[in-house]
Image (tube, rainbow, N blue to C red; front, top):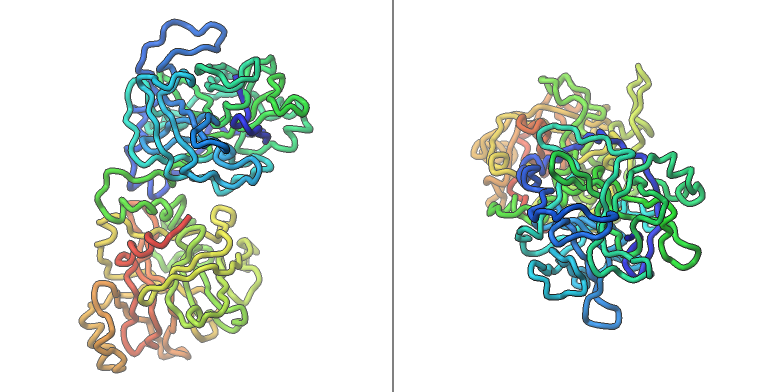
Length: 584
C-alpha cells in the first residue's frame, strides 16, 4: 500500500530507538481536567463484525478501521479538495497525523486550517455518497514545536475540529498507547503491526478502497544496517522502522496514518507513518526498504496538553487556552516530599523564578518574575519594563554573581542559565505578561521549569494563612542570591490600616479588595538593612497537597521596606486575563 506524504509530496526521515516501557508523565492539566477523555474502555473496538480473513493482507471492508481518517487539502488550482494523507481519530475533537501532512512541500509553512478537511468513516474514496461518511472542517492545526522538516524529527501533528465527532459503528477512536489500569502493553519488536491507507497502488495511483498491510517492527540496528547512508542520516530517538522489504508496505499517500497493535480485543496506536526512501529520482517510495514511523507512544503528554476541554462551563477550565498552562512537570522539584519548607535547599528548588532587567543592569536584580510555560513569564509591572527599553529575561539562576551555580562542598553544579530577549509585554494593573522571543528550555535543563497556576475552583478560592515567598532582594550582602521566606497573611482591612497609618502611602485610588493579598515582610534589626526588601515580582506560592505541586498565588507590587504589610496581586483573579492573552 503505501508510504510517504500526500500525492504531491514525499517524505524522508529518521529511524528508531524505542523504549517499550515508556513511562508516561501525566500532566497536571490532564490529572485535573480530562481523566475521562481517553478512556481505555471506550476506544479501539471494532463495531462491525469482520467478514472472514483478509486475503493477502490487503483488502479491507467498511468498518474494519473506524478510526482511520482521510485528510484532504484544497487544490492549488481549484476550490475543491484533494486527498493528501491519512490520520487517526484519538478523541472526539482530535485527529493525529504527521506534521509533514500539514505543511507545504515547497515553503514548509503550515497549511491554513481552512484549506484542510477531514473525512471520517470513508472506505471508497471514489464514492462520495457513502452512507456513514462525515466531513469535518479543521479549525486548528497543532504541529509539534520540535518538528524539523529536513530530518522529520517530531513528525507529528494534531488536527482539531470545531464540533465534536459523533461516534458510530464506522467512526470510532483508537486507543492511545497507554493503560489506565497499569497493565503494561506487550513488547512489539518483531511483532506485526497493521498499517492502513489509500496510498499508491502498484500502478502508482491513489487507491480507491482502504487497504491494510501487516509488517513487523524491526530494531534500530537492523534498520541502520539495511541502508546506513539513508537511515544513519535521518534516525531519531522517537521514530522506529517496520516492514518486510518485499514490496509490501506503505507508500505516497499513506503518510499520517497509524500503525496499530491489538491487545485484549482493543486496538492501540503505536506509530504514525512518517518517511521512507525512494526509487531513484522518481519520488515514489521504495518498498524494498523499511518504512519509518513516528513513535506516537512517546507523545502522550503532548497530546494531553493539547486536548481541548469540552463540556465544562467553568470559564477557566473551559477556556480554549487552558492547555497552554500547567503542563508536564510544572510546579515540581526534587524536594517535594520534605515537610518543612525551610529545610529544603533553595538552589534548584524553585526553577520557575525569572529575572527581568535591562541589558545594562549589572549590580542588582531589578524585577522578579515567574515562568508560566515555554513562551511566557508573569512579572510585576516594574519600572524597568515600563520605560520602553530593551528587556532581558534570565531563567534558571540562583546566585547572580556567579556564572555557574554549584554546591561548593560537593562541586555539584546545575546547568547554565538561559538568557532570552522579550518580544511582547502586556500589562494589567500591577502585572505584566511577558512573551519570550525564544522558548524557555523546559525539559532541557533541570534548573528551568514552569510553575502551576490555581485553575480549579477549589484552588482558586482556597485561602492560606501562610505563603512561601521567593525572589531576589534590592540590597544587602545576600542580594545576589535567590531568597525564600514563609510569610504570614494579613487581613486586607488591617493591611489598609497599617499602611495608611504608618506610611500614608495609600490613597482612595489604591485597590484593597480580593485582587490583593497582604503579607508581613520579615525584618531583623540585627542586620543591615534590617528589612528584607524583596523586589517587585517576588512570588508567593503554596503547595497543593492533592497534586503535590507548587501553585502561584501572588506577585509583589512594590516595596514596603517593612513599614507595612507587603501587597501581592492575587493571580487567581487574573487567570482570565492571562489565558485570553496567551498564544502558542
